[in-house]
Amino acid sequence: MEESEQIYAFVSEKISLLQIDGPWSKRMLARLRRGVGKDPVDTPDIWEITFGGIPESLSKYKSDIGTTKAELAIHVALTLYSLHQQGNDFSVNGKNEKNNKNSFASASRKLIFPDGKNENAIKRRFDSLITALDLTEFSYHARGLVQMMRTADKPIQVNYPQLAKDLYFFQIPEGRRRVLLNWGRDFYRIESNIDNKKE
Image (tube, rainbow, N blue to C red; front, side, top):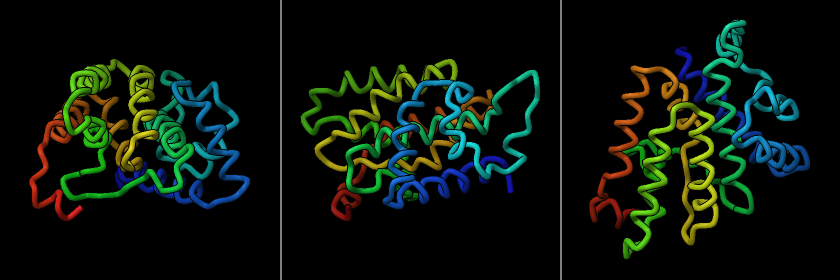
């Protein structure tokens, strides 16, 4: 299995654990929220969930790079998920492969009001996100969008395992170009009336 697919499977499994209502999941979600925007090295209290059971191929340590690209992508995706899930009684993790309607970009698009009054403000936030130089900066800009998703009038879901996979490629020059193009398509895609009626 490719690294990106391992990342997807790992994050899916961790979210499944976090969705089991109980003291451990509530405690871990609270800890994860405190890790948003922080380096994984500075958040040892969440290693149990972000590093626990991680495939060896995703965490091969090299002294010259520190945290691996996979570990960083997993950390950012799970901490943003925990922020999004806070206070919601439905699962904010939505796996929808059709036109990737639950990508982070398409979810950001859903923040635009029907009358378009806030469109420029959302576009500015999205533009800051896609021009981020690294995942620390990405996480900073994503945090604001996730907080808006969390409190939106209508439920907004994100495919968080896919986000982790995208963030892995975001750190690789040739992969980054593909991810940004896909996010651009998802953000600017206009859904057909047929799709809207089915939802």
